[in-house]
Image (cartoon, rainbow, N blue to C red; front, side, top):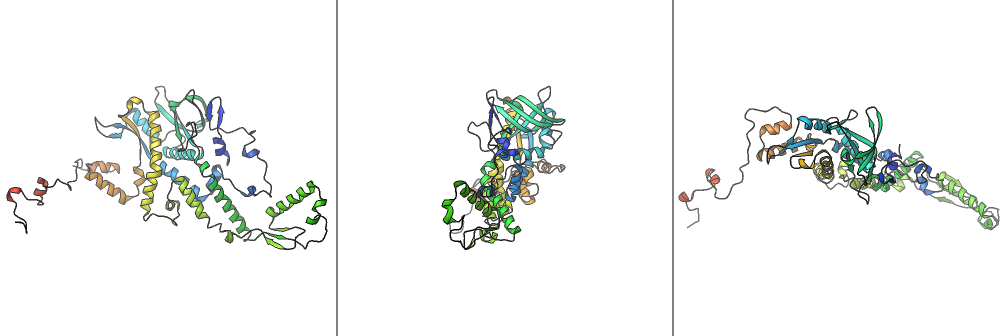
Length: 442
């Protein structure tokens, strides 16, 4: 499964259809068909983590799971306009109530709504695209939402080909209208604008450095930090096989001799070669290479790629935020909010009709993110109360029962026009007809 996600994005043209499908096993460029690397090739020591193996890099695992779990907390609501010129409120009746159940509780019998939200983000990062098939009933209303395991798009016919695991096993759908498919794309798109580009491709070099450094550190620690040496005896004069007699060897013998040196050099801790009269260090210990300290590079680069402040990656060193709340606000504003907007746009374009614009909408509510931030939520509630919310409206957000006379609306009166009656009634001004000269005035 390690190469599965990379295979999924290898882009192919099949009958005009742009796909994210698994390539044929006969593809000469496929990883499993590449020739094995020998010990003398330095590329054999480079680790390219693909698919789920990239999650073995701690910083990448933390960043990906943070984005997935943050988006998984969002509550997606089907809302309607509350009266002419009113506000959007959640609609819980009729077909709207059924759609809200699919969006908020269980989109299909196999997963919950939060799990689907998380897996959509996972597929955007690893595949570049996430497909959700809208199964409709005989009336054309959504009956289930199925997260797909693969898909392709035909721009000429504006249709999709999808595969997903249904309640009774795998299913394959062909020529599905685009109106029945929710297609969530990564922020980077291909040149034709039809498909998203996996975020892991952008991070591949950084992940390779991190994984290769971790593997080298593990090897050095397992060996106790031993160094590799070349040990040679004093060069005998005119001995066969030495440098002085290379001219007597044919090309095949020289190539075999060079290959033997390379394999011994990269594959053994101590290498003995005839024709040398010194000991030479050819490697350094993990302390000299400072491989463990290089993990700071790993965290910073991955945090930059995923758009997550370092302090939220459990890395306080080098953080410029005085308070963790500032980092959280930066993360929500710059990374999560754009994802929410793109998510809303796709849902609105596929679940609503053009005539619903201005009357209904699909809204991704971010209030659950502040559920455990009691102080921050209290400050927001105070501002809401001063801006016209009633106490019962605020209590309803916490699932608290209404209180008597709690439907009154208030507006803060801290500001008033200079010289207004409000200031005079509070003793802050004097009516002109009774105004006495102030001290120092003539």
